[in-house]
Image (cartoon, rainbow over all chains, first blue to last red; front, side):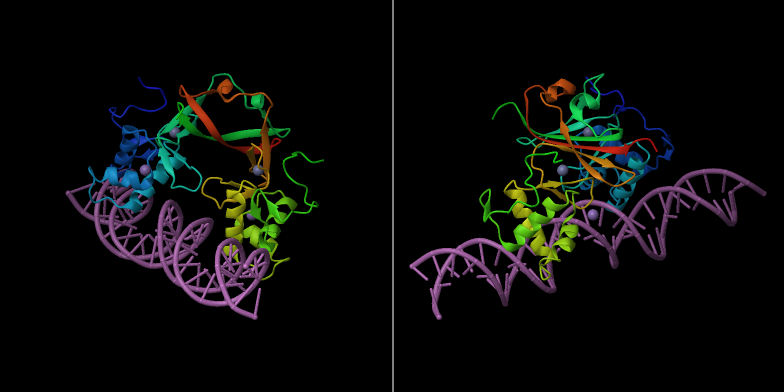
Length: 142
Length: 142
DNA sequence: ACCAATATCAAGAACTATTCTAAATTGGTT
DNA sequence: AACCAATTTAGAATAGTTCTTGATATTGGT
Ligand SMILES: [Mn+2]
Ligand SMILES: [Mn+2]
Ligand SMILES: [Zn+2]
Ligand SMILES: [Zn+2]
């Protein structure tokens, strides 16, 4: 039950090149980790996980790989307040719901066909190119 | 032409105490600066501006004051990506539109009567307590 | 296969925003 | 005035991230 078709499943082979970015061993492994558990890990989380496959990788390389993946539109960087950045392989437009009681971060999508100006008072003539939405709360009552 | 009634105008006297926070000289001046130009300044911006009235104030104090104001719900801290935090005296629920061509940050409000679940696919049973919305783009065509 | 050019990686230093620490100052209260 | 708690100050410390530099790896042309 995959909820988003724009994310490759973790089993599919990651090709030699993705969106114009050559997939080195390190980049491939970093990307694979992101596809494996879609829990929005931090750079350090990724570092710890990727060490299983590449024990000699450095944190700097993880940062480099993540930056390359983000700049080629393969991965999204997600910031919550001033916490460490988190990374998400879902590059479709989506927001995040942060469950305060469990700490789990859920992807949330816009209902099809909705328009920003349907629910927001936008400045006249505003052309929106990028949306960032974060919700916080709980799943179910306490 | 004030666009939001939950923000005191810059002329009104700031009382001895606001929302349970004693207004010291430094806190009052920091708050006054935020009310004066609602341009979402950074802590350092506030520091530079507040020096006119209090030349011996320290950056640490500006951070202390901003933290106190935020924790008492008098001021909102706003984060864009990994940039320095910005501060906003509008504590009503609102999002932000960041005009990429001018750098100006506009407050945006939700249209009255709209419900989150009207336009978002939320996880079942999600109770939302906090919304953070940032839009980026341009005012008018290039 | 060899070589040179280019890209990537690794390690640690550097950087920036923010928080912490500890000493001085302030302001209100007995 | 002496006291006490809160606040302010200056500078050190911290955390996340980026930068620098030299080592490795990969590519494409011969
Ligand atoms: Mn984590
Ligand atoms: Mn600024
Ligand atoms: Zn996500
Ligand atoms: Zn605002």
